[in-house]
Length: 81
Ligand SMILES: [Zn+2]
Ligand SMILES: [Zn+2]
Image (cartoon, rainbow, N blue to C red):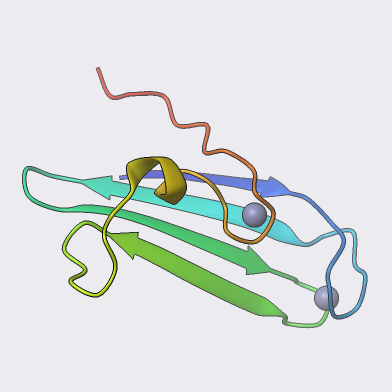
């Protein structure tokens, strides 16, 4: 499990400079999950999106999952090991 959070600012609701973009990555033998969250500490604005390798409705694309669906930044995880 890796977690990475950066402050990006530009809240779509209140314009706060404190809006954060967080990326979580989980992986084991059978399952891989990327989740993204934008959150504003000033007005409580929040949006989330998760990409799961076991999602039957949507095919899992690791390239797409490694990019924030809201601000399009790329995940900056360092590989384990
Ligand atoms: Zn806000
Ligand atoms: Zn983002």
